[in-house]
Image: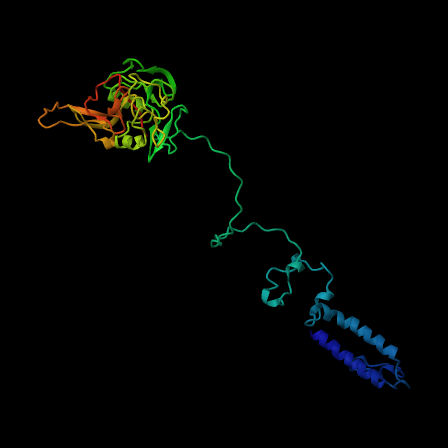
Length: 374
């Protein structure tokens, strides 16, 4: 630095001398004394030096002194970004830690200004962020394939049909209030839809009179056939159960017979059984045929067995009634199962109010038949 400062003083001295014309002196006379340290000037030039001469000397001093100055230290802010050629300075030219964040101007270094370097190793997995909000409901997916067929469920209890229809179209019932009543007196068969008919002329049923093994007979309400007879209360009850029916109660039978003629319009005096529906005029208000005459019909009720009979008043057709024990009569200790309507040889005793409890439930006769309800 002392050399640089000396150079600067020398330049200033040179400029001052040039201005005064001292650099144009010519040497005359005796040579200079080297030990004196002075420049002998005998007489200055008659005129000042030219500007070109001054500039040439200045250039010489700058070349000799300025070079040493340039490599030693550059003035502050003398080098800016536009002074550096693109890609002339790279990261390998900068000493580690020499450039710090505090020394960089705001936004001086951006992603766009940095050349893409070699990727470093992946950092460790960060912590899981908080749960985001539930997204919107997605669209319904496509229908999946039909699954395998499940096992059949348990058999339900038999239902009742409000329209009184049956599995067999020939087996006809009519609506009476809230119940269904067979339109015709029953014919008993070997299958639910027909087969062999039993009881037309004898007791030929393939099961016991007590009904305990009567799983093979079926009750049907079919037009144009001889109704089955010679049947006990117990057999009749089981034949109906096998056909999903039952014996009507005494009250239900009485409701169904209403409107049936109490006269010879029904088979009350021919002495023989007629086919079902043969007496077309013998029909009730509800459409049930042959409820008066033809055959006595079992109903579901029992009473104390009767030993004698009487007749209803004339207003009730003078129909027969045989119920209970009279005064002083001994009890048989057996029940009497009720039958209704009279039979083919009952005459005036037959009718819509005719009732008898003389026969036991175990009795069977050529005049005893039945019809079903549901």
